[in-house]
Structures are given as C-alpha cells and as structure tokens.
Image (cartoon, rainbow, N blue to C red):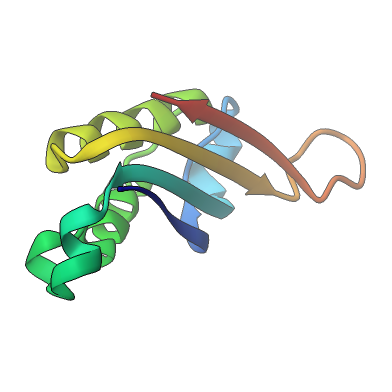
Length: 117
C-alpha cells in the first residue's frame, strides 16, 4: 500500500544565500517534505520498525539545513539524496525549501524551491 508521509513547517535558522551577507547574518527557512513510501507493513503491524521513521527524516533535514549553501536548489538536492539513501522503502520524495523575507528589494513573504526525486 502506497502512502504519503508529510512533515510540514519545519523551521530552521540557517546561512544559505548567494550574497556574502546572507551567509554571515543568516535567515529563517521553512522546509516541507512529502515522502511516498510503501506503508503496507506498518499499516498492519502498528510497529515503528515497519514504518518510515518521521524522526529520522526530520533529523536528516535538520542536518542538511545546517550546511551553508549558495542555492536553495543545492540544499533541496542534498536533502533528497540523503532521504533516499536512508530509506530504501522510499519510492518518491518532494522537498520544498522557503527562505522567509528574502532580500530581494521589496516586501516578499518568501522565495521557495521545490524539487522531487
């Protein structure tokens, strides 16, 4: 049975950005992951050992968010690769990274990148 596991609204303070000042001062980011996995065994057993562990997925995202990058695309790709490496049952994943209040010269709530693998 295919299922979708989503971890939404993960908030991080990180140092991603094209401009030197962004990598020094930092900014707030939101991350959202959508994980498509075989959930058949877990849905029957009710045992975390049979499930894609949400805590482990969060820890992967948090670890990758700590590594400064110039581009959000780079951060999202690293997260996708790490999730696929950690969870063999993962069929497909989507990662959205949003930079809150990006320094683009106007009032902008967020700029985001979404990648899937």
